[in-house]
Image 1 (cartoon, rainbow, N blue to C red):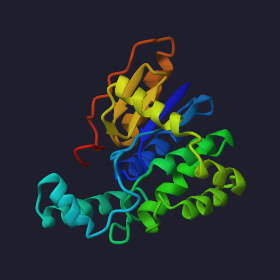
Image 2: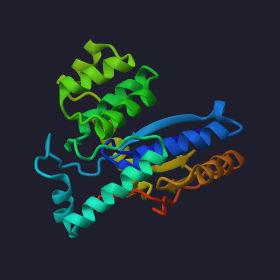
Image 3: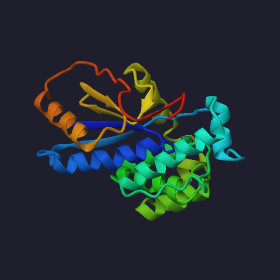
Image 4: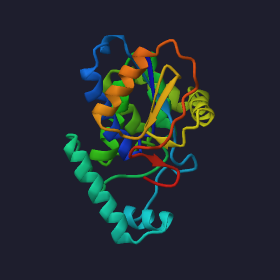
Length: 231
């Protein structure tokens, strides 16, 4: 059974959702028969290599809220993440383009290290204050998980996997995905948002019971998620 997960490296709910999905998969009776593929989704395709200034002030301006409200949202996310064993550090997070990071995730998929690469990038972004648009940073992170340094540098020096990233994003649009994380089972069932493990486990079980289905999923953003209009 195939599970595709559309997410962005700069999406806090995507990291929380990854942990919750892992908890669900650990309880799933047919976990060994599940193939997980991480799909690309950029919350802001026009993002510069790095944004500067106070993060909360920037979010407040973008989404029409007060700075205090933006800081409260960040605080709530930090508390939620802690409940999943994650240490969110918005005070040191460096925001910018995630396009090249997604390309590296595609490269990692060719080496059966996609999940490890996705995990390392999320941790670097949300807990370590690393700039995931920086090529030297991407090389170092990729080498940590076992990717050949020369391969990573070759990818980042050109346009390799750019079309794969764009194709993931086009497919997301075709499937009605406008917020992440979104979990799609066999292109037949979909759930958008960082749902609790019990709900994601039910999705897996439902998908397993309906493996012959060919229906196109309707990915409604019913759970906690991030979209182009915010988290």
